[in-house]
Image 1 (cartoon, rainbow, N blue to C red):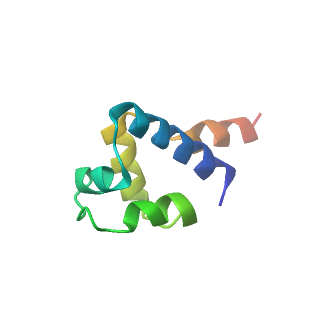
Image 2: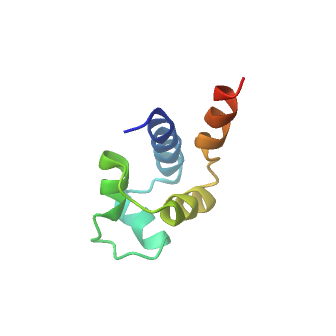
Image 3: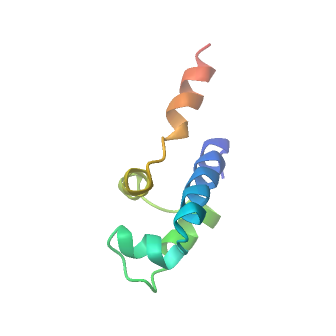
Length: 75
């Protein structure tokens, strides 16, 4: 899993904790069944589409850290 993804997952989990959400709550918020493993796989294996990551980011108000890290590489 990339450094960017680990930073993003940490930020997402922080926001989820603030809301008192579990993975099932986030799955439902992005349009999946509460029993879907999509969020668990996204966090643990990095599996998931860019659209899913953007939806999660939008719902929780998380910036996409890959933009910041890409800019730092160019410095």
